[in-house]
Every structure is written in C-alpha cells, then in structure tokens.
Length: 517
Image (cartoon, rainbow, N blue to C red; front, side, top):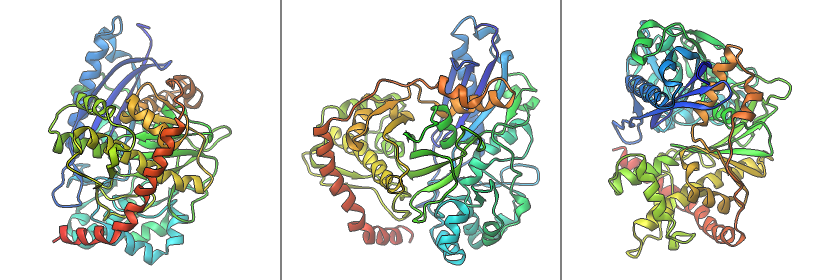
C-alpha cells in the first residue's frame, strides 16, 4: 500500500474538526482531530469564528500526517500521495463574508436560538404549509433563513456589509481553493432551498428579503470546485494543486460514510446533536413539519436515494460535554469513557432520575427554542453515576421521541446503524437497543462523515464510485439485540419523559423571558 494514492477527508463538526487519510479501498492511513468551543456571548446565542475552524484544520491535518508517519511505509510520502480532498460540515450555520471573502463577524451556528420570533414571523407571512412544501420542513432557529431575518431587524448595518452568505464547510473550501460554491445537501439546511428542485427557492429568498446574488452558486457535492491554493497548502503541509471537491452536509455525508442505502435501516448519529436519518427515493414532505426532507449528497439516480428524512435533537453529546465540563470539571475526550463506565454501575432508569436534554431548545418533535434542560426526580441519594446515566438515557429518550415522528410517517426502519462519538460506547449501544427495542449495529469508526468526505473526493476525481464503495468501506460491529425486560422498564421511563415537556412548556417560556432580560 506504500505507493497507493490517498484521499483526504475534512469533517468540520460543532465541537471539533477531524481529518482522515484513507486508501482507495477505505483503509485508514492517518487521522487527527482538534477541539474548539462554542462562544455564547448572550443567553440563547451560539457562535464560532471561522478562524478557529481553520486553526483546527491545520492542527488536525498535522496530527493526521504524524499518525500516518507512524504507520510505515506510508508516512514518508503521505502528503505527496493525496489524490483529492473532500469536506463535510455542520449544517444550518451562517457566515457573513466581505467582498474580499473575509468573515465580517463570528458565524452563527445551529444551536443559536435568537431568531425564534423571526422564524415564526416568516412562517406566518409565507404560510406554514408553503414553508414545509417549499423548504422540506418547518423553519427553525439556527437556520440561515431565520438568522438572516433576525439580522434584517436587529443589525441591518452588518447585513448590509455582507457580500456573501455561506454555510460553514463552504467557508473552509473557499479558504482551500478561493472558489465560491455550495451544494444541495447544505442548501437544504438553510431554509432557502427547495429539495424537490435542488435549487434556491425564489419564494423563500424573497420572503426573507435578501439579494439572491449573495447566495453561492450550486454545484453537486462530488464536483471538483477547485484546487488547493499554495498559501493553504503551506499551512497544511501538503502539496498545492490537489483537487478539492465541493463536499456535503455532515448528516447526509455521514449516511454515505455509513454505507446506508436501504430504508430497512436508519442512521442514528450521536454527536453534538442527535440525528435520525432514513434514505428516501422521493422528495415528499411531512405535512406535520415534525420531520424534514433534505437532499442527499448524491443526486437521485437508479439505486441512489436522492433525499432523506431527518428528525433531530439539539443536545446529544452537547449535554454530556456540559456534564463533563461544568459539573465534573474534567478535561479531554478520554473523560467520556470514565463517565460512561460510571453509568454501568446504575440500573436502567437511573434509580428514578430522568433528564430532559433540552439544553439548546429542541427541534424534533417539539420545535421549541425555549425548551430547557431538566433533571426530574433528583434527590440527595443520587450521585455522579446516576447523573451520567440519566443524561445518557435522557439523550436516548429524546432521540426515541424524535423517532416517533419518522415512524408515524412510515419512514422508520427496523434496524439501527449507530454512529458518532456516542456510538463507540458499548454501554450507550446497549441503552439505545433497549430504549428503541430494535437491534443495533455500530460503526466501528466514529468518523463516518470524514469517511463520506473521502468517498466524495474519490468520486469527484473518478477514482471510485461513491455508492458502491460506501457499502464496502462501512465496517459494522456485531448486532446488539434489545433485552425485553429492560425495554419494558424503559417504556415506563419514556411515559414519564414524554409527559415532561408538555407539563413544563409554559414554565420554559417564562424562564426564556426571564433569561432574556
């Protein structure tokens, strides 16, 4: 394998960026990661600066190169063997760029809740049915459309200075190549694109009141957008001139990296948020707006699902990270393993402690930016172990709650492919199987979005067929069958969990008003 060409995948996540080098047959040659935080300048706000993303890419690329150098005989020439670069990125965010393609403000990212009134106002003006039909789902806080509407009202001067409105991963690719573009999978998450046509929706763009020329042109995710510029190459320590494909949004590109091609299986990703995604052969929308219809990273073709149905919760790993940082005051990714080991010592149901994981509001099924995190049943007898297990079970219950919307639309499969950082924990895998009452197989690598980026890179330069290669690249662990007794216990827990949100909805709204003072 010493002289084989390599593919490079960059996955821009919410809490870290990951870089992966793979061979053409999907073997990992090197990998690296770099963490960064979320800036919260005011209650309900969530921002990151694109410069922090780029510093993370540089650091993670260096770590991946060092990792490859530790796997002879690949390391000595790894940089010179990169055939193409692909990207994956967090959805829904907004980056404002100047005429010189420089950020003029921090990026507003998907957990941001400031635009609740604007999302509701747009929906009322355009009509809920029209918004769902045109955009694939209900408009939510954190979506580019809602944030742009907020800026029109609250900071029109800043909005007026912006020459381009970009999604996060597209800003990275712009820095790599100097070329402006996006594609339908990330466009879907803006609230401004029609998934059925895979083009910007004029009615939605006009409804927000923006100049359509400030939106980037649309290519397909596996098209080559440009080549690596010398300045970026020097910082990354790799040669200039490498083709860079457009890339895609992290959820559908993660589906590709997981080899998910059948509706019999759905993908549950436990990353910063939690996403449940099912491939779809049609762009039909959910009339209730409880789930979303978005574009896949590959256009529709025989044997290729061009869309997917999505239900999402906003706080999955985010809640566990909050517990790690603010309650346990631990540092590093290794802390999660010790926390989850604590959870093993507690029986299902966390001895009567239930966690509502609404730390950043909630999307599916409630679509409520005012929702708050809650521990129900907390007593002096509960300790650190119960807190950890309750948080993990609460996240899983939130995902199960969201899955009911997919099930009611007839779009939920009978097997779970579990992905993301949370999917690497044997204890969490077992909890997912027992809560859902379905068999679970986890991806042995937690880097399915970076894998998908590599697949798109290879497809863009004709080195492989992404669809057929994906089924070979995906490596799944053994099937975990649900335990009927534990599933029954979790059924009783879910009944209480499900009652928690409607019982507290008015309280959440009052708390939101208080925090906004």
